[in-house]
Length: 275
Ligand SMILES: [Zn+2]
Image (tube, rainbow, N blue to C red):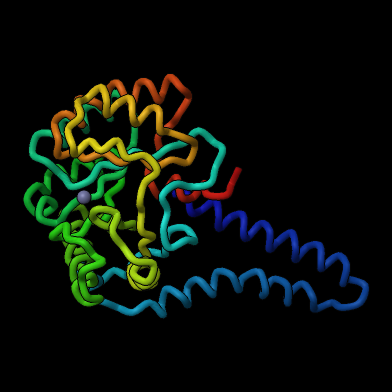
């Protein structure tokens, strides 16, 4: 939904440009308007061509649907450039049988939307929880199948990890993930580049890591999230740990009290560079 305003802006710019040039050229050339309109339409045509040019992989075989258009303009984001008080809460490694539903209740009661970087073994095990995540307005991202270090894998192994996880998410929810997060944040710049080209995924890292996996206790996790949050920030939490879920009511309420609002990762990316 956040991509449409961008398209509208492009079209608006193209139209204003066309109108301005038309006014200038009117006394001289009757055909200039048509030419400018063609120029304006070209933006859309280029992106459609790029999408067609993307290699077709086995991940497209799930339902025959093509991958969605790439999110954002960069290969990777650890935060986005905005002064608006928006942050993205991200939850990795789930879904978990009890912790994720408990987290979903907490998010629902505060009307907070988040992004879940799920591991395919859990995606396949808990399809009902996956559907609940999507039904409640959250976003799903690809976090591979085996949760291995991608920098130690061959290109074909990485491709298999991402395509199998993509398929599992689509099979469970009917919704295609649009971003990926490399396990441990381990990824090379060349991997970021070809992954974005082939899958349309930007690689999503983070700006705040409370190291909740070390189990420092709920109040420390909450305080680290709150003190680290900045506009455009991406907050990393793991919803497989019970203490991390315990930290969320306090963390979310403190962030809301400070004026932050929560959006999903693709919504946050749509704000990049927009003030
Ligand atoms: Zn992980």
